Image (cartoon, rainbow over all chains, first blue to last red):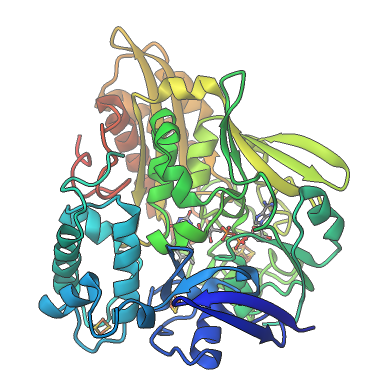
Length: 165
Length: 347
Ligand SMILES: Cc1cc2nc3c(=O)[nH]c(=O)nc-3n(C[C@H](O)[C@H](O)[C@H](O)COP(=O)(O)OP(=O)(O)OC[C@H]3O[C@@H](n4cnc5c(N)ncnc54)[C@H](O)[C@@H]3O)c2cc1C
Ligand code: SF4
Ligand code: FES
Ligand code: FES
């Protein structure tokens, strides 16, 4: 049984026909929509490499069946920059050496964008560490990642304490 | 992953009508899709609950109870200011679970229905009575250091992995259910079943029944000023509990007038410790008292394998959670919720 779904991916409307319902959003992006920036680490929700925004919220695309997302807006790492102008989180990862091999980086950046939008961590390093715990980094670039998210958070004008719980 | 049919109902009635033997309801998918990838679950049909109208609300009822729809996302519930104020222990338990991404997808209903993390259950090639009745249990005699110490049977020694459920057990939640036979309510204490000889029966839900909401009684909000969740894990965040405890107290004139205690990751269901609660009533908080209560909570605990250490770990976690609750609910959610590290972690 095939399914047709509509998605808006990085601002562009896409009509997709799925041969069957087993396709995850991660596989759809990488294999069908020519967007390999989103990475597959564990494929089981345990690493965060596949993090994307769906309707503005960060999720693990490896555990989301594409068919369930009919009508959704998806943002991937390819959709963050405005031409050559990097998103503040991307720029901060470069400025603070928030990576080594780079494999986890798209997921880290998308997760950080989601975290900052959630407004719970503010510019508190511990809250950022906790909020970013769903993204593992095999190279252990955690120090630079935390610094990058802190910096981006400040630049994006998040309040200094984070939202009151 | 096996091939399956897919249905996308928009009302609870349609969802229930779409159910047939072998079908599974799909919510956030963070547990079901994972288990389908490994072949542990092979539903013939997925009934996607995500478009069901009206199940994504947090409501205050006329009698003061709080009703949380089954599709409310774990993150949204934990960050709802009114909810977190009334039931801070529930918010802390939720935020100690999984990751920011997973909590954005995971739902209230799915969290309660999530399957055990027993490694042999998760491996389709191992013998598991819970997956295949009568197949045997590879966890007995296997790597079983994290398995149950309470309520287990020879058939199954697995634990329930939910953090949310531990707080709900402590606060007398009620699960609202709809199914082919109509609607009913299940007290949280009766929702998850101990394995006995039928570990494949995990909850009180009948075939095709759907969780539509979880209700928290107004009376449980009275415990909000002294209420904590404490969770031991192998790393500070993004890890399941080794053991956990939800503790809440109501104090008047320095005396405990009401107490709640539930333990997590020690049994096939969140373990409410009623006898320990009874012992606390009328007493003045002290470490010695909390230690005695924790001893009572673990009465009857026995190792199910290489896990005798979990009994002492659970005792100390329970006593510490009570001591943290006695100090008072932190004004703001700790940076590391339910953790032994950071602010609000020390007594
Ligand atoms: C890496 C990782 C780490 C995790 N860490 C933690 C942790 O530390 N603590 C913790 O508590 N949890 C943890 N989880 C588990 C997570 O909380 C659950 O996967 C999630 O809550 C399940 O919710 P869902 O909506 O995604 O359910 P789904 O995956 O959609 O469904 C799960 C099950 O519930 C059934 N179901 C769903 N909704 C209903 C309903 N309304 N009525 C009846 N049946 C229903 C489905 O049929 C299925 O069997 C972790 C998960 C992962 C992948
Ligand atoms: S402990 Fe229970 S879930 Fe684990 S293998 Fe044995 S029967 Fe299966
Ligand atoms: S690939 Fe999705 S979490 Fe690892
Ligand atoms: S930079 Fe190599 S895995 Fe993170």
